[in-house]
Structure formats: C-alpha cells, structure tokens
Length: 128
Image 1 (tube, rainbow, N blue to C red):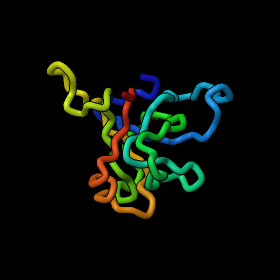
Image 2: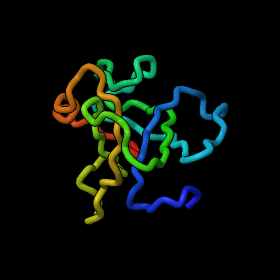
Image 3: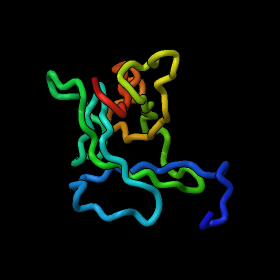
Image 4: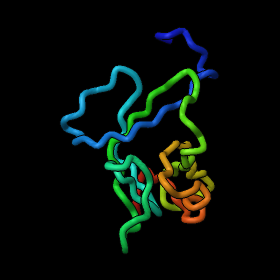
C-alpha cells in the first residue's frame, strides 16, 4: 500500500543474513524469518549458496532470512534453486492437510537445480 502497487505485481526477494538474531534490527520493508530448517543440504554463508551437507547432517538450521516484497523478480532464475517450504517433515501432509506452504529462491552455487531436486532439498518449518 505504501508504494501504491497491486499485490498481483509483487514477488519476493530472499536474502540470507548471517547475523545473530539478537543483534538484528527490524527491516524497513519485509520481515526477518528465523527457525527455518533445510533438509538435504546446508547453506554456506561465506559463499552465500547451497552446499552438500556434512556427513550425517540430515537437517541444517538456516540463518535468518529476509523476505522482502518487490515489484518484479530481478534475480537471475538460472542461478537459483526454487526451494519448496513445507510445514512439517511429512511432505504429503497430515490428516488430509497439505504440508506445502511456499517456494523460496536460494542461490544454487556450483551445482545445477537438478542436483538439489534429486537430493530432495526442501525447507521445513518444523522438525521431527
């Protein structure tokens, strides 16, 4: 409303912030989200991209993510992995309730998007 844009023309920009949650000030636009979990990969803050998980690392606790609304998506989709976000680890859902929530664009690094799809990489809002 502040910029007078139609909600249909908005998309999201996602920025991973490598700071302590206690030290982060509220953003001027958008929202900071913490408590997300990455399954099947880890996020390397130094190179700002997805990496293969460490041995025996099933779930990785994500740093803070800034969800910022923007008029049009300006990121290069070829350099991104469109990561699904699920409310629970059971991706099919529980009691006839779908678990899928949203998709989030993450920098895929040196690997192709197909690599992350084959690994079943997804973001979770809760863990088992």
